Image (cartoon, rainbow, N blue to C red):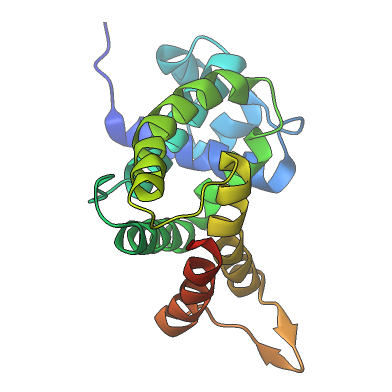
Length: 196
């Protein structure tokens, strides 16, 4: 039995993510991946049962990484402003540091593969962020809202600024650059909107 070559698995993951982002899941194939990674197709079958197994495992890996990064050093029991700021910082760092993973997850979000990943992801997020939300409501630091409304108000501004930054969006002939200052300015408006 061959030992797992973690560097080879990492290369396979990176090339698969890149291919799916650029060509979509329908354009993704094992032979094309093997060629892009500089390995034989048989090597892929050492680590993965088939194309679907490969895609599912990569989706789980990327989703788990996103969850880890989003919850790094986050405490669900802190005050609302401190906790939301930490969430914004973590998410901004992840989105800017791993743009290919973010695009990959966005592509996978609308596939059947994502359903199994989504259930696990939501359970983890719900446990931590649900407690954070409920604590803030109980301490009267946050107006009680349906969770989806809260989520849209709490995070959409951050995601939109990151999108402006990564897509090179410009208005009035000036390109938007995501900065700590811009993030804090938007965060203060969100906090103002969400406080009772």
